[in-house]
Amino acid sequence: MKNVTGMVERYGGRYLARTSQIEELEGERKTPQVLVIVEWPSKDAAEAFYGSAEYKPYLQSRKDGARNEFVLVAGEDINRAAQNAD
Image (cartoon, rainbow, N blue to C red; front, side, top):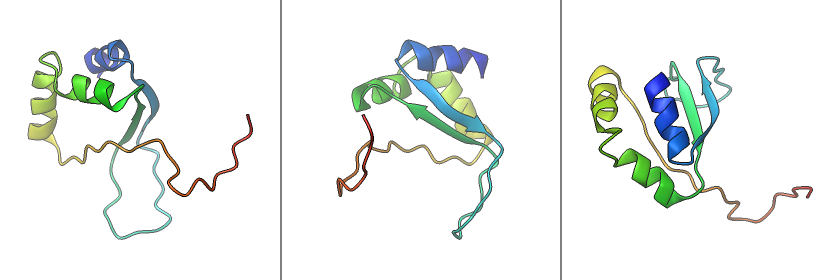
């Protein structure tokens, strides 16, 4: 984890959550044991990290050792309904 944390930061990522404190309020999927949310400066930065030779051995180890979902989520409100204070 320590090695990957440094890699994430070098690629511009910032951890918003890395926790096992997860409480399901709704849904049918099995609650994950750990949830990690990383904010990236851009999709390109996230993809550069994910595809990097530096991360490759950790990616393979993660895939071999656990069931994972790894997704990119756009930081947007497609309905533009949120009223954020500036």
